[in-house]
Image (cartoon, rainbow, N blue to C red; front, side, top):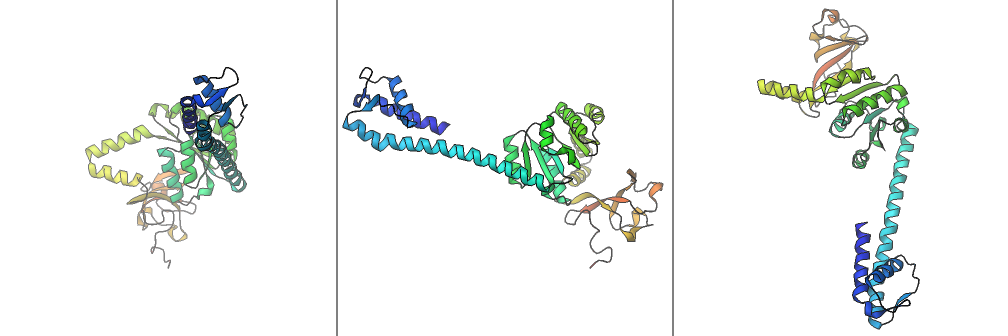
Length: 325
């Protein structure tokens, strides 16, 4: 738009300052309004013929300057239109391809700092990018998601039609990271009404809103302000402990927290005796601390929450500890 306006302004000034070389069938002289009128009808190739260049200088300026400006204006107009259509076509193609191959996918609402970190964690733990769909109202965030190789839909996830476009009815997990807690509540309600079985994780800013979000249907609620406050307090009391906690929460370096299945060779053993640093045992949907008497002996179906070096595959058995080559 700025380029088009610049071209039109340039042409208006050229015609107006050279108005002595033009004639108007109405009154013979050109005013500033006539220059604007001549520019619009000329640059759009309409050309009614009521204003025409009569002097050689004006005709030469039209041939060497005005005509190239007209061509540049048409190039900007057509190029912009083609770019918009191509962008919409690419968007429809991505969504169509995603809908064709998607099953039990993960919907991430919001692709800000929290949403991107959640996606990075999912990918680092074996979730393929083809199974992740981003929903965000910001076109810049949608463009970033496409750059990262993710399918994305532009829209407000608190609206049910947007969630239907995201095929939330068939989603396995939904991660909600909106900027406002009221939007998180409304989005959670709509997601739960459309899909009663999906595991819904919601990030909220204020701890006072956690009960409301849980009542809306969230399975897990993360309070960002409380988490940051705890980390700040730990870093103040014990900088080393704060560094360890930050390491556990940061992806790609140092230590990682992961969940993995129990291996056949680990049946009947104590969590403390395993090569991995086991911090919790998940049994029949309940989480037990590693020292709980209930999980003194590991059973089939147990899952382990472990702390691992970041350079190892977090959800796999630790290399060289189970007789594998």
